Image (cartoon, rainbow, N blue to C red; front, top):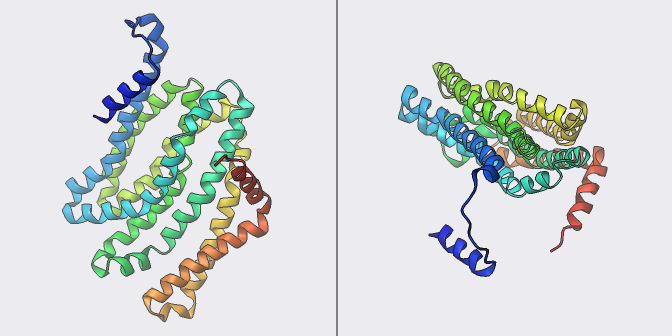
Length: 302
């Protein structure tokens, strides 16, 4: 109903006469659409295969634990990634023939995403035990270990969608299609193999197998837009270095005498110390990058 109303509204506002489509004129669009369709279908298969394996092999209780761990571990990061992913394809498509612009957009967006998602995911993994016990109670202890593993996976996955967007914009949709089909074969097998170690094994399959799946797209991306690997890694360094300092600070709190404190107070202290360590690291070591994004944000029209 919504699609019908919006279509009628667009036609009423900006009318354009209809014509019978010609196959020759639609050849490129149909090819791209076919590759996009198969890529998304493949993504749907392998992104839901872990739930199927958990339910079929491990049972309803394990599926419940894994679903909660997935929700807590990935949805906060997915919200940020999905929000940015709605607008970035248009920018990449607009500069698809300009490698310098593609590199600039990709590196800036990757750095910005990493600055937001890396500390969120790493912090979630660090305080997973206290978070679960404080918010859900002792009977959900089975969520803790898969939650930690899925938080690690989510931090990496948050920047990967930009790779496929650049590949689609530069005419590399066939590679994305083939890689999606490859993932739809490999990932379910990895989930089944990991299920022998419970929900933690299924979560480990994401951490171990998913980076391997992305090697081919990353390799083609770096060649396609002449992007050195070192330059790409440099874009993630501010977030990565801040997250490393945050991990060290929170681990120090966990090893200190505060471990005997009430759970709620210890959890609050870990969150405050982690956020403070991350912010301080960025301010002291990467102040120029913070200033760059602040000035960029101010240029956005209200």
